[in-house]
Amino acid sequence: MPFPRVIIAHHIILTGYGHWLPNDPRGSMSQMMRQPSLEPLGDIHYGRKRVHPSRKELKAFRIAARPLLTHPVLWFEHPHRQALIDAIRQSIRSETLTCYACAVLSNHIHLLIRRHRLDGPKLNALLKDSLAETLHEEKLVPPEHPVFSADSCHFYKSDKQAVRNCIGYINENFAKHHLPLAVYDFVTPYDDWPPKMPG
Image 1 (cartoon, rainbow, N blue to C red):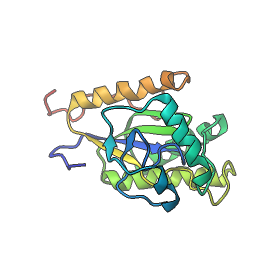
Image 2 (image 1 turned 30 degrees about the horizontal axis):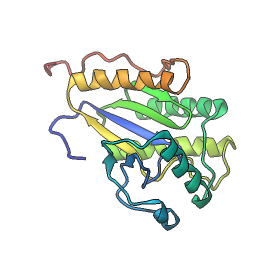
Image 3 (image 1 turned 135 degrees about the vertical axis):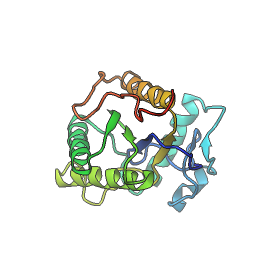
Image 4 (image 1 turned 30 degrees about the vertical axis):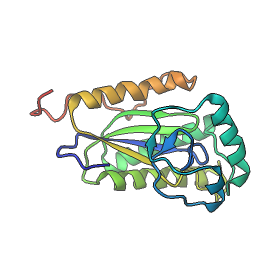
């Protein structure tokens, strides 16, 4: 996406393997097909489609895609989620990150990280690699399993209201996934940073 003049925070979304494919009928943030076996299921539509597919269409796509995947679709059950939460905490402490919101859900993770010396793509890669490594080390997934989809979503937040809206959106995801709201101990309440910026 275009690079904004001002960056306050990075909204990073890490999707569990197999849950949002490049040619997903809802659209995706992928720009290339990394797995040729998926090509018969349809073309890539970059970005979310304005008209969403029905649940029936989406279910049919997922059923058709499952046998074409190299690895099993990964759901984050309670042991996975707890290990991922611990790994995020460790990454935030070791890299001195400020996290304004986080939701570890059953098939994806949302993180809102304040601007840092690492740019968005590097933050994305760091978190993705460290979290996958944790699940491998704890033997919660086979060693050859990638854990996350190859492509991750990353959005810049360039004004204070956008940060507040994103925090609300991330926290609303718990209810959507039938999970209790969790405010992890590594989440810092948003304090309208940066102080000299209006809004």
